[in-house]
Image (spheres, rainbow, N blue to C red):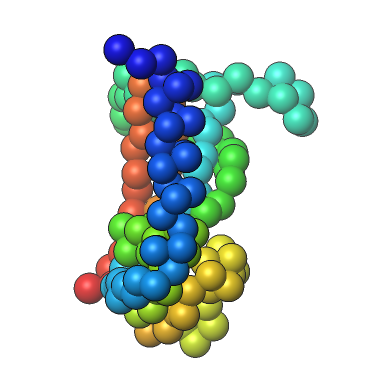
Length: 153
């Protein structure tokens, strides 16, 4: 069995041989689009800059359960904001491989959301609706994704 690093190098080398053939391909992709915020849940705030995050979904669920019948505040810290949605992620990957991509979907309307700008430099994009929004709470043991997508219906 090959070492993972050896396998990655072989895959990368093979992909490089496909750049020129890929540049002759075209793809049409759509229709969704999401702005994904990757978020940590604060367990304990140490100071204005530092905090300890809730490590697991089960610990988060315990905290939520303890709030039943009370009011509670749960601090969320955005780690990064990125493009999301199956269509934009796939289309962006294809464009990065050199494939000529045309994308039609929900990237922001009338103005495209800035998170899609780099993607739009690689591909021909046509935004026809506002993007959905996902708050993705990341933990050591998984991710909870809260999607706001009603306007995409």
